[in-house]
Length: 198
Image (cartoon, rainbow, N blue to C red; front, side, top):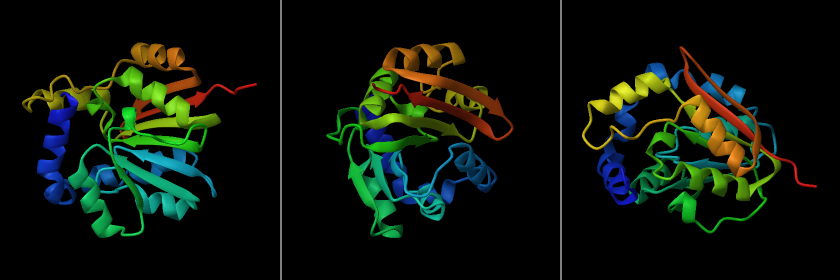
């Protein structure tokens, strides 16, 4: 979907979003967070944060601060109802004014398929990450499962996670290394490290 359609799609679903969450998929979150190696004191950008499903996990892990970013203002509004003190930004991540070389980790959970320009998203993440910072893309479905689920929904058929080769090309070109994309029964996990700057 284009960005305008994405905003409308998620705005329309925001109030009922939490009731639609699959508890089986949500049970996998702890494992994904462990794989992302969240450490005490980390500064995190939760991009495509939705209603804040990851927020309590970051708090539990001891993150120093979390910026919750979502293109859908109504998703952000639902998040604020649950976590009034959360630092939020309703904006297009690719174009948002964010501090450079600031975040330890950028994490996108169950949302990367909806980003229209994935090259721009990778480039933006590199700009705001500290040298050696990590970019993590997590999904509770595998690439094939997600593609099948989106095939059945109007307007979502092109919202997919690229192949391993395509992801490697996107993130290598954007200035990342240690690129990993793995899939198993818990879904899809991608990680990349911003190349250290001399």
